[in-house]
Image 1 (cartoon, rainbow, N blue to C red):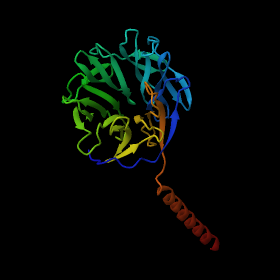
Image 2 (image 1 turned 120 degrees about the vertical axis):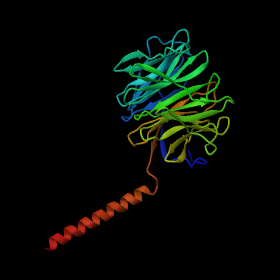
Image 3 (image 1 turned 120 degrees about the horizontal axis):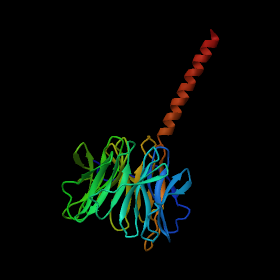
Image 4 (image 1 turned 180 degrees about the horizontal axis):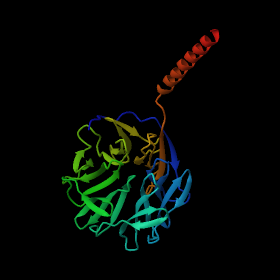
Amino acid sequence: MAGGNPALASLYTFTTIDAPNATLGTYANGINNSGQIAGSYINATGNHAFIDNGGVFTTIDHPDASSLLNGGTAAIGINDSGQIVGTYIDALFVNHGFLYSAGVFTTIDDSNGTFGTIPSGINASGQIVGSYFDATGNHGFLYDSGVFTTIDAPDAAGFNGTQLTGINASGQIVGVYVDALYNVHSFLYYAGAFTALDNASTPPSFVVTGIDDSGQLVGTYSQGVNDVHGFLYNAGVLTTIDVPSGTLGTFPNGINSNGTGLIVGAYYDVLGNPSPPRGFLGTPVPEPTTLPILAGCLLAFTMAFRRKFASANQK
């Protein structure tokens, strides 16, 4: 992967997403091609999953989720059919995965996940990726047609292991792993092969969190404490995506795939213990040169049409 130093901040407009009952913060985690956003918010009764459909928030808490502050439900990924994957924490503080479809919860727990399962992404075919936890640490999984397949990066070591963060319509999977020296690495997994997404030319702590159907990546990189930046990686160009008011960090989590390039995530703008997150929707705007070019093409077309119309009337 080539990219060099991060490019200038991209031309995006940002809309803050604060769930109505989010007294302690909001996370926007996934977005589909219809603009539906899946995420979670926090208040005194714990974590709550939501779907934001054009500014209308609907809470979708799992009935078995603990109501304690550290418990609750989180929606993490959403596909174009409106199917949502995520996790809930039960009364014993164990994470369980779920699929929420047409108002029905279905448990998605890897049998190897003796200490919990967290799905993180779902594609148009219903393939689900995520992570499970056992006595040896974190492991990635692919859930396809009722079958779990473990996907561990070859160089993953220690308890932190491998975590899968997203999957697109082609079955390309992205994730992160931690090596024996506690360095974090991002990768692409496809057709049984791992491809490194970070190298000497990428910024420090380069973490990929999402992938769209064209292969665009979103994620974060860090240049120090409280100095975390979002990025969009596309066709060899790594571009910074920072919410202007996110002075304590911007964390993109998902990107849609219909060519509009909508990005969702969370940012931090005030100190706290914990610091309350705020969700965001990033919408790309045309580059400065685009509109004059379009205007010039339209003017040329109009003038040519007028000349043709005038010539026809003179015959």
